[in-house]
Amino acid sequence: MEIGDWTAKVRRNAEISLFRFALLSVVALVFLSSSAEPHDIITTPVTWNREISRIFYSRCVACHREGGSAFSMAEYKETFPWRTAIKEEVLERRMPPWGAVKGFGDFSNDQALTPEQLELLTSWAQGGSPEGEAKDLASKDKLDEMIKESAWYEKKPHALDPAGGIVAKGDLKLTKGFVLDGLLPRNVPEDGSFQIIAELPDGRIEPLLWLDGYKQQFAHAFLFRDPIELPAGTTITGIPKGSTITLLPAPKK
Amino acid sequence: MRVALSSLIFALLIQQTPAPLPSQNAGDVYICPMDPDVRSNSPGKCARCGMALVAGLPDPVEYHLDLNVLPKPIKPGQPANLAFEVHDPWKNRTVTNFQVVHEKLFHMFVVSQDLEVFLHNHPTLGADGKFHYDYVFPKAGMYRVLGDFYPDGATPQLIAKTLYVPGPAPKPAALARDYATKDTENMSVELVTEPQQPISGSTTQMIFKIKPGDGLEKYLGAWGHMLVASSDLIDMIHEHPFIADGGPQVQFNVTFPRAKSYRVWVQFQRKGVVNTAHFDVPVKELGR
Image 1: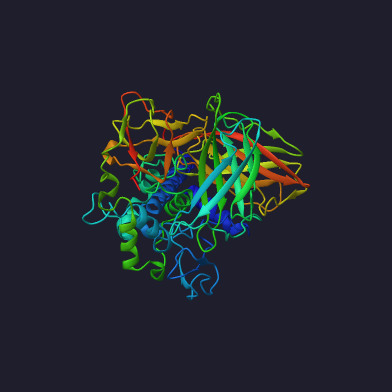
Image 2 (image 1 turned 60 degrees about the vertical axis):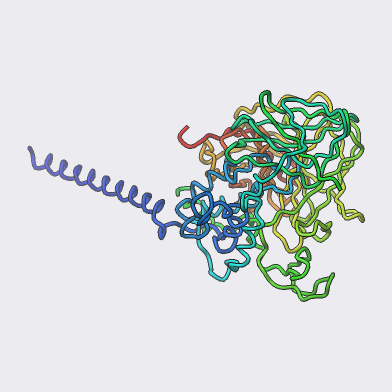
């Protein structure tokens, strides 16, 4: 081997080594940046103490806490490792497990996240998920109050007695007037998406409930903010065959 | 991380304020300890009970929006009046104090189920405490109506409603990718996305290139407005530019929530004329 060839080979090997080192450094940097807390770049003004904890305590912590039905997300350090999974779950509307499309029917026990809450959670999860300043965290009393006001607290959404309701299996025409307080789905196709509407005799169409990804595991009633008066001759449509929806009557005054 | 880094670098290099997040600018609000529905962005006394308002952070509460349309039933091609009434979540009282956002108290979007009808306009607050708007629904079917408003002392609200115009409904939209340059009133609008294939749950930079590039003006206080609607009309997102300076390139940053196809409407104003263009953007799941 000529000296010139040897020098070229050494230089080439050195270049390859340098390239490998640079590549490994980049991979290591990416790995550290994506997995280690101190290396997360903060690009969001949204913090756990200020905005995110308030959303979590009003929508998630009733179940996600010590003694609740799911792992705890009551504290920043418990929630931080789940930040990416949380973002995916809420954007896909799998959590909270409300199972209905917002803005189709108006419910007093609505537990779906609002677009603003989704935007805040997304920004926080993508922007380094900072904890923020301690002074911004609500008091323990306030946080406890938010949990208790949640419709999921002590399984409130499940505790409804459908006695006196009308059981609909497929489309249904009302033979007499009915004041509708809510709907309780049973045996509906999981991961299905279907709209239940009321066609009134005067031609009006009232949107009642748009189920989307409703899970029997999290079965609950959908209670209207104001009862809906349905006259005789109203047809309820959109209930898939083989499914059961109970029409819940409004309490008599 | 690349997206976060590039966003950070852009933010550092360009002196442009990104669109505010819902409570980013909210700061302290002032709430009556007795009547939590009495709220203000400035200190003072409760107009109802006279107690001093107490500073606090706005809770992530959702206000209620009632939409009543007359006459009933709604008929396609005939005038209808939409009346929006906002209620507080504590005592269900009608809310009449709002902050001006982008020059208006109330922004309204109307989209038909086939995504052919798009309307962005501004109902006006009447003496009855309701926002009113006269509209002729052009066809039967389901419509999604989006109200965007900011009650005083609360956080901004973006609330969807659904209404039906009885009659034969159009087929739901089936959207294929449409990035073709659009010629509108007095400009052409080209779309480039980064990444080229948007991924659900990640930030997509949506860069609009406008020709001619002169004479661009702010429309309702922003260099552009965007409404994003999923083909099934479940997701509806209202965005403003992330980077814009009055030049021919405007960037919005959008996180598409789900792997669906989306129709994206953008509005830009040039020489006093509002231009509206739409593009169709299929969004995929990471790795699929």
